[in-house]
Image (cartoon, rainbow, N blue to C red; front, side, top):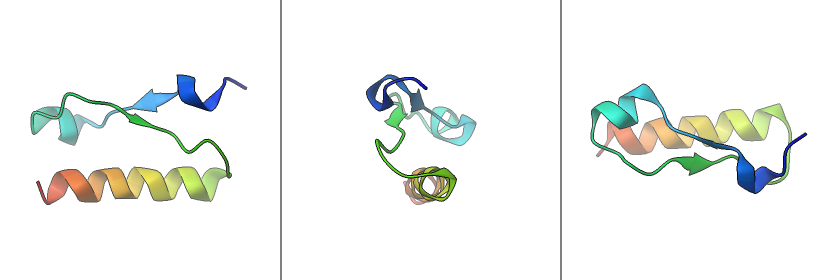
Length: 48
């Protein structure tokens, strides 16, 4: 498994809205924590 600081993501919605900076995945936790971070990311771009 790669080190957490090496895994970053961006959504198509964020890119379409001009977001340039990718988000890091959580350093700890499991699938639910990753899913929660993805939802936070999408929520932040939808309201921007």
